[in-house]
Image 1 (cartoon, rainbow, N blue to C red):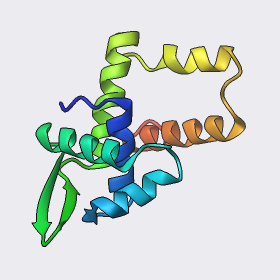
Image 2 (cartoon, one colour):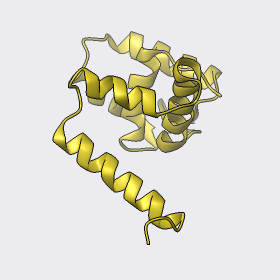
Image 3 (cartoon, helix red, strand yellow):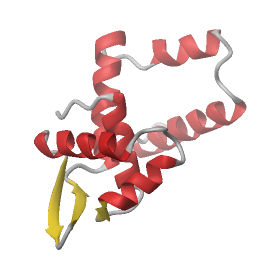
Length: 127
């Protein structure tokens, strides 16, 4: 699995927002959320290319970037890794911890109920 730093993940999010994308497009997308200099973003793009997280194509003087991994795929692998490392693969302690500190909103609870209901129906347990 490709390991991304927090800054690299921010660049990936900007790219996932619409691709293929020019470096200038990615810089523009990030300018709303960060105070990073253009050179910093280009350095991060270079790191992502070296990690094979993105590819590029040169068109004239422009570089056009495309992710090699989908956001859903990456977040699923990262989530699974996180839960495995901290909770021995169990999700209940994670959710329980948030519930105990009252960090679950009603929306979170409703979404969790929907996920569980759907899972039970797919497993034939909800009938």
